Image (cartoon, rainbow, N blue to C red; front, top):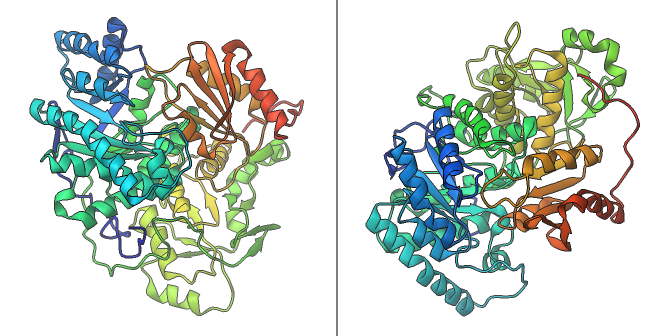
Length: 596
């Protein structure tokens, strides 16, 4: 089923209503239904180290984490979940524990005895992932499915008997060879992989599961979740399983928070998502306030009951294509069409930065909003829209401030109604604040609102106003463009969060690699703690740095491993050598970085 023309993933793209899902109990925590969006995270300690795991679980719970995941890569690791669970409960903590399973059905069977939920990845649970290229006949494909059924059925029966929940969690980076060769490395392949496992569960009358469709690229992640929800709706009303949201390998710092806000926030804004995990290459306790802030905007949010005529989208929500517009030249910069998405600022902020604009490098403001002849429109004003569309002149347009709409539906409505030749300036807020703002509280909605629209293909220029500091607002604007894959102006990193499988210190290593390669504009580098998702999540990366064994690193070009078992102390220099060999290296300029 590849034709998506008849599929929809939410009732109305112009008004908010939360997707109706069934309730699934994870221990004593209810997920889905009318329950709040649940926040979860994952510990990083070695699963065999009971005191360290218990301390980390309790610390996450104290920070507000509602569900905690622990890796269980083999049966030996899984067996120690008994001790971890016992000690966590002895400390008076009833947080649900989740075992993270890859590759090993026997580990899953052991883990299910001790924890409230088991996460399986259909791409590598009893399936093959060797990056083999072969053609599967229908008979061979069905034979593989039958083999998977035989491996998966016992876990389904055990979870059903013990009252355990399950997450069927597909990762873009770990689709099996069978799926890859039939569907490619696509959102459709991700959905099909998960649905195969769900059908096996349903055949056993087991329904206590949730889905996830994670990817490191927010565009891919958004498309995959939208397609999954549309496919579930098409299967029938009893396929209303809860959805777990996350951008995998989001990275650290501002970049990791922006990527997560784009992917998670845009789906929450469309009513999709019952539990979320923000994956940062930092101590996992730092994930909690970010996830809480994303969820808080939607917990208790009422459905929009305003009366308006539903409009058909001007784009395919399951496949990215930039909105077609005419090219304008404003203050010496081309925008619209296939031209660069431009960064606007206000006259006041331009004046505040004027003395150092020449030294601001890639974070320069490009166009002053007040001098751009921009036309501000209330998208509800059909007379104004009609007048715009009847004009022969092409205009840069935006949504007027104060319009009683959230930014995402407001700009979608403008894009649906206005003639596509008119380029659109996106704004993160229609009610700009006065005075100083909290940067995190400005960053997340800005990334969610502007990033979501960019991933829809809407937007030819952007203006960030929720962050009132002039330099920080510009940095935020450029980082949103980078995270959405819209305008690449610096090195892009795909970095996984630490977990018990990690074979080196991800945080310090990522910072070391950033320091050595951060000047390579447009190069994408993946930093992966182990091989579970590494080769696959590096599908879009130019180079990869992956833990192969304790103290040993494998280096990749794309998905292909080219150097094995390099001592960790030498690995960053060897990565630089590899980048040189492929003519992607340039020497860093000897100048102090610009301050914004």
